Amino acid sequence: METQAISQVADRRLRSVLTSVAENLERKLEAKTIDLQTPIMKMTEYGLKISVTLEQKAEGKPIIYMFTYKMDENIFKAWLKRHAYLLEGPLGFVSKGIEIIIPFGIEKHDKTGFSIDDESGDQIWFELLNEPALFRVHRDVISPKEWRCFIEHA
Image (tube, rainbow, N blue to C red; front, side, top):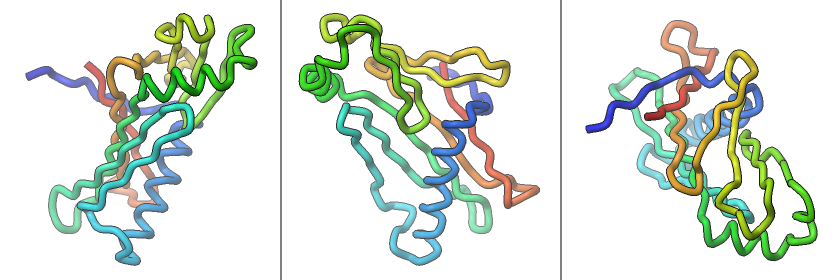
């Protein structure tokens, strides 16, 4: 079994997205419109699939919101073809807390970069076309008004 390293997410954009969604899901859990087994998935028009699973280790413990980010390559390629006019040069945008850089257009879509900032302002790059990124979000055990956001990586 592969060992996963866990580090804190320092990127403010991503933390904001993850905690906002977690707060919204927390309200839905309290209102009983969802439960821990409810499947939660969002697909963007350009192919970023975000799945959220909920886990509670024990009664009274904070709920862990596990976000999985993964690109659907077929949807991404179709989106690039529909928006070819945007790709005359490099294209960069931020969506769902992740910066997406398309440096070489449709032909080299597999060179697309996905990144977030670390605590020193350097970029952490992901291969979302090849493997998912997993983020864990939960309330702090000591100070329950605070959120903790982590990323798992090999």
